[in-house]
Length: 49
Image (cartoon, rainbow, N blue to C red; front, side):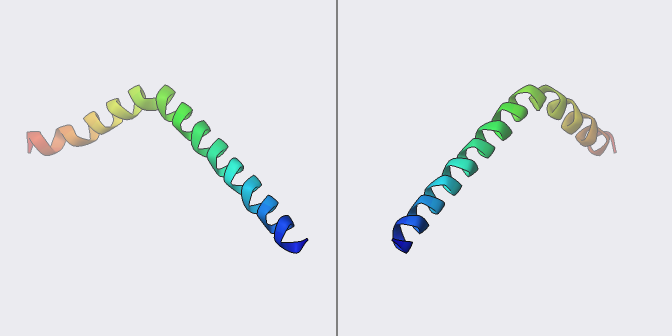
């Protein structure tokens, strides 16, 4: 019985982690342009130096 409960807990945790990852990927998708601009601005001075 405990083993089954543990399995259920692990499974639900996996599902939660997966959902978190999906959300993170979606956010990254919408923020990718902003991130690109940021990395461009950050890396530009190094090239100019």
